[in-house]
Image 1 (cartoon, rainbow, N blue to C red):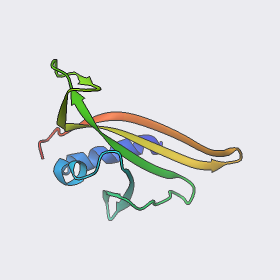
Image 2 (image 1 turned 90 degrees about the vertical axis):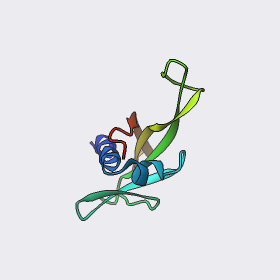
Image 3 (image 1 turned 120 degrees about the vertical axis):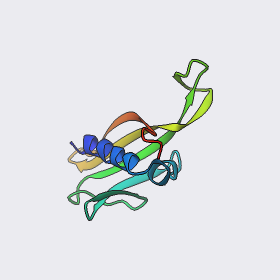
Image 4 (image 1 turned 60 degrees about the vertical axis):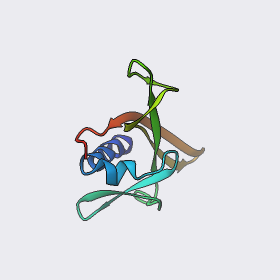
Length: 110
């Protein structure tokens, strides 16, 4: 649930302003999500969920080949990012981490 909620929160950030909320973030850096006064925000400060779960996300740049398909190399697509959300927690056998990835685009050109 926390992974899916993280993806949905990032989509809300995208919908409310690609340039301000997605493009402004550095690719490859760790970011966290916080919910303040009915809005989602990204932050560089970890905010544990229920003092147990750590949720972070990382954005990666996306390249396109000559067929406009996502590829390892090619032309940088300024309007697409790969996002991976990670959730970690400490259990009896150490730390467990799960993740989920998807692509987001500048759907609303904002």
